[in-house]
Image 1 (cartoon, helix red, strand yellow):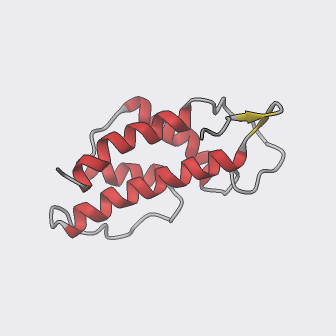
Image 2 (tube, one colour):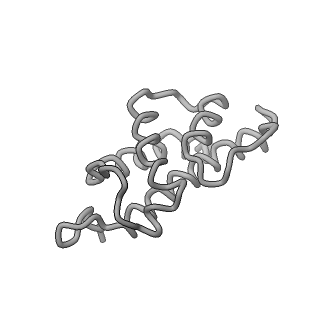
Image 3 (cartoon, rainbow, N blue to C red):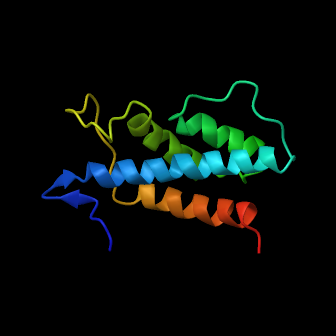
Length: 121
């Protein structure tokens, strides 16, 4: 069952919240796997829980292939995820980007990169 990006012309914030949380969990899983497998030491100072950009950078430092477009999309989503805007929407203080494609692309890309590393066949 797919969730619409927009409902009655309004952003479907629960959908965005779920997708950005999935991104956060994928990045953290990648980093934790790298630490537990012994290929990297735990970060000296882990980033704040909901900081997608910092978790993405650590994942890249730990071997996730860097993708400029993905990095830019993560930054856009971080501006909505880190301050919990997607979870507790308020009137936007700046324009909100078109979210009909970005979250899906980021989740699909991270899943295709992270899952084979975490769960090799």
